Length: 304
Ligand code: MG
Image (cartoon, rainbow, N blue to C red; front, side, top):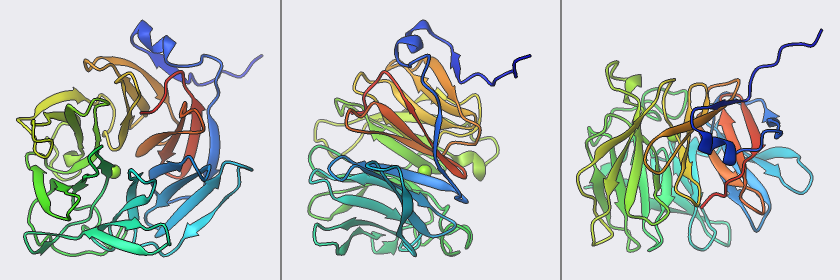
């Protein structure tokens, strides 16, 4: 008798079959975190970094031999990451209550830690636009307790999304979400998409991703609209593929949506997923941060 196996995929739309490999398997790259977040890939270095926020450490998977080691600890309770136009690591720090960048010589430079003279809450996720500006969410998870940062009241008194201009000026771009979290631009940068995990604080806040049209100035946003809602858990971090499909974290795995917002299918993951990124030389592999583990799977899509 063969052992029943848990299905890996849930296909809601025939298009999803063209975005996955039916014979791909889910691999566990590493396990041992308290809460994994913020994956980012260095194509030049062939390595993947991610946060283990409660353990205040940054982990590194080496693509040349598959080994995993501690990259930095303590690390100011880093959460989300991205790379900028020069390939430098940009980090959201709960502990530092800042967005910082590692320069090519290894020094840490704070890019934003205040708005209107008041300290940020705890930057969560970050994306760099093609003009070099840095857009980041600032919910309260890193100041709610000492588990993922340092407990403190919010100086600003609101959870918003900010834009840090290349000259360092910080402005508010989204202020209508309860707890803005993951964020990404559409491949053509005509919209900014932002997840709201506000249900953690407001029970009737529907878990969703909203989108906002980028104004012609490229620096501000128009009126937002709800784009997709989650049918299982919260949307935290998400990424676009080059065709404009969204691959999002959720309670039961990775949810894939078409550019129009139709659920195409799911990759079912055995732990709650917080974030993901495309990686590898062809950017056709997903690194999936899920509670204690980092999983990976090849897909028939490329990250943009
Ligand atoms: Mg997040």
